Every structure is written in C-alpha cells, then in structure tokens.
Length: 66
Image 1 (spheres, rainbow, N blue to C red):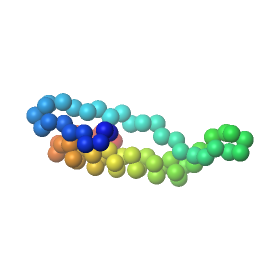
Image 2 (image 1 turned 30 degrees about the vertical axis):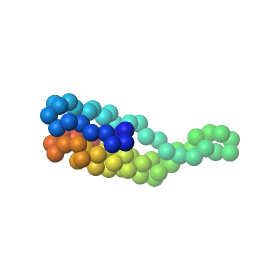
Image 3 (image 1 turned 90 degrees about the horizontal axis):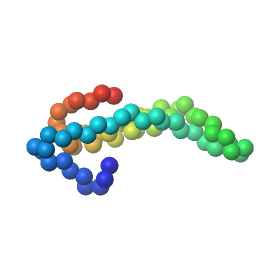
C-alpha cells in the first residue's frame, strides 16, 4: 500500500484484495527454484497479518474473506 494512504470515512468505496499466490524458496546452484514449505507458510501468515492490521486502520467493519 502507498505510504500515508487514507480513504475518506464516507467515500463508500471498497478495496478488494485477492489472495496472492505465494511460493518462497531458494535458487539452487544449478539455477532451479527449490520451494521451501516452511518459508512459504510463514510468508502467507505474514501477508495475512499485515493486511489484517491495515484493514483495522481503514475501517471498523470486518468484511474479511481470508
């Protein structure tokens, strides 16, 4: 999100965020992507937590679909 973003309280606008496809891993010495399930789950949890905190700042209505 843009730094210092704010949405006027009575704008009646909504922000729709789609669940991203997240895969985290490392690049092997041969140049191939090697997924890491633990890192991927942690990254997904971090993204969800950050979006949740941001939504709490924007609006008190809890219309979340995670």
